[in-house]
Image (cartoon, rainbow, N blue to C red; front, side, top):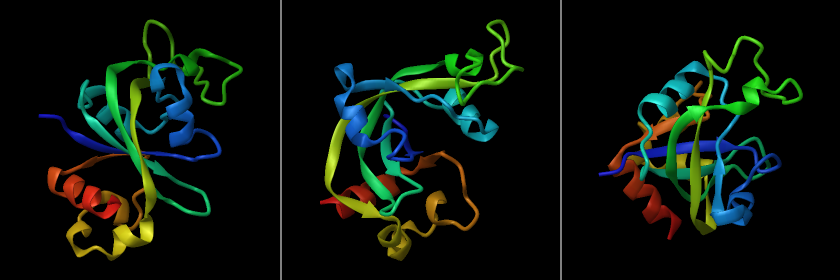
Length: 154
């Protein structure tokens, strides 16, 4: 049985449409620089897990579609690239600090499931995304929350 996740990205940086347009509709999820999010990605995400793709820091924030994990965590090469915005001089080939997974496009929703709608749904009151102060770019979603959000996307 897969686990469920929500991953945030700014659509001006990387959107659900960008993922859909990648070769094989697949891309690595790089640039995570929060230890808690990294640990979830490295230690808990597995091939076959499903992901809600969330557009953040934009005019219309919300869940835009679904992806799935197609490759488990491996070292994030952007941490080693001095020209990358995600460069980390403390990360080395022998001792990587940061990891990424590969995700593949599954579906784009016809209508964005907005943050406001998520907050208004009493069945989602425990969703980490709607809790005050939660800034993680990756968070777990329960099977019940997943099903409720899918219902909202229809």
